[in-house]
Image (cartoon, helix red, strand yellow):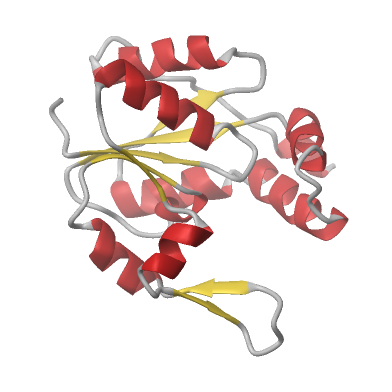
Length: 172
């Protein structure tokens, strides 16, 4: 592998955890899910004073992740850069994403926020700002196996991923 890290990011429900595990198995790489448990184990998660929204010290998280190699996955990873990384942003059509998030029992408010982020291309825009070059992969109609094949093609330089992903019409 020509990078120390494969960063998999995107809004919740796009398939980051599933795809990362399968890529890790395929390539024999360690997978680090930057989950609530991981954040708590590193002491970098805290609750807001209202007790609702979870706040994360992104500078502290970045410092911890600079020591890691392999596949790193989280929606938070678009918020800062990690050197020597290839970045893949997973995308999903909002109508399909909504069904996935409903299956996770997300609140209507949280579903709305995530659909808006997807329609506005938030993770891709932030990743481009922080990393420069990123690859996008639309998981809406791909099986996890097809997505793994596409990621491997990206990593081997045979694919540029999906271009022209635009879900902004969802906002109309």
